[in-house]
Each structure stands twice: as C-alpha cells, then as structure tokens.
Image (cartoon, rainbow, N blue to C red; front, top):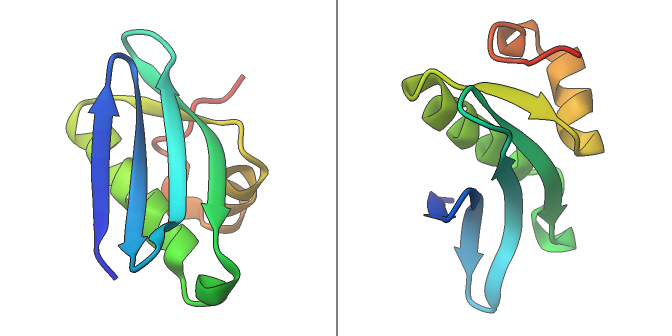
Length: 95
C-alpha cells in the first residue's frame, strides 16, 4: 500500500491508488503560512481495518513536519487519531 501525495494551489491530498481509482484519500487545505487543515478522510470498505487511514495521516504528518507546519484537524477521523496517539501532539494546532 503506497501513499502518494498531490498538491495544487493551496490544497492537497494523500491517497492510496487501487485498480478502480483511489480507494483511500485524505485531503487538506492551507491554513496560512504556519499550518494546514486536514478536512476529509475517505477509506473504501475494502481497506477498512488495514491501517490505510493511519498511513495517509502519517504521510501528511511527515510532509508537514518537514516544512515546519502544524496541522489543524477538522476531519473527525484525524481528530480521533490525534487524541489516540500522543506522538501527534507536537504537530497538532490547538485552538
């Protein structure tokens, strides 16, 4: 399961491509110079329970960290993951 990143004009997505398109994706938009907002996660039934969502999030966290950005979680899945895994606390943008 290879995660790919795509960006264009202040937004982007991490996705896992399958035979019939992208069965898993997580999207973000720019929140300004210092953070991104992760606003949507979709994982096809066929990939649920495989860790696909966490792989997508880890790819976005790595990208944001390399750029010195924080992440504001808007998507309920990402909010839950940030609560569940304390290692994300250093990159989370708290309101």
